[in-house]
Length: 131
Image (spheres, one colour):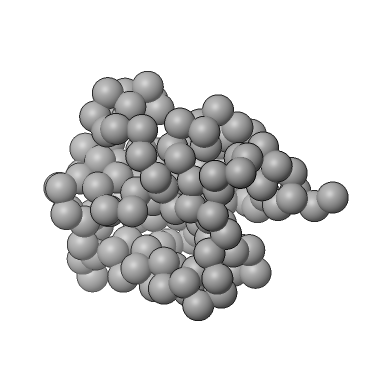
């Protein structure tokens, strides 16, 4: 069983595995809204961001909604799952690859799990990349 399989099992029946085409569309959306530098989001280039300290603080600002799960490994499909369930099994989710992002489907927040242990949570009205 692969780490992706373990993640899927942990997330349960409600997880959606996006097709290769849809996964690429989500990655394109992600990359068009966030500047990635050295495998991390360059948070200084994101407009209107409020950095949060914890997932609990994020849940104070958002509903328990659906998020995209993206990994730095392009060979992994993008998943769509309930934020609360993702948080419950976050160790299984982040084990799949080095870096993991949880992107709200409406682009109102992004959670970045960086492989060196940093977790950054950005809440914003309307992100856009600045060059």
